[in-house]
Image (cartoon, rainbow, N blue to C red; front, side, top):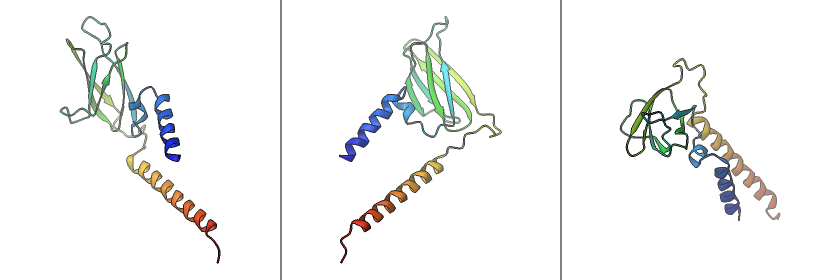
Length: 141
């Protein structure tokens, strides 16, 4: 029964987000919005988008589709020059986005180590709670 509650909470959290991808972007340090347009200035609605991390233009790290206004949002996990490419069948639009200032002053330090550490502390607390609870419920001799 607790498993069903957990699954229900996950679906609730995903439904409250704009997209499931936004719900899973926990380690993003910056949120980027790119708007793509055709050569004549019209928005590239529902175009396929691929986002490439700095230094790797061969493997997309994120994919998706633009909205009706040609906009696409994605989170980045590091500073540098990110590349986004949109294709609508006929045309291709590319954008290069400089993320961060390079000084590290405004960088949000939510790293994978902090996330794993926090989850480890929560796991230790849960195990301790279960141990103490089992100990108080044990029959006395």
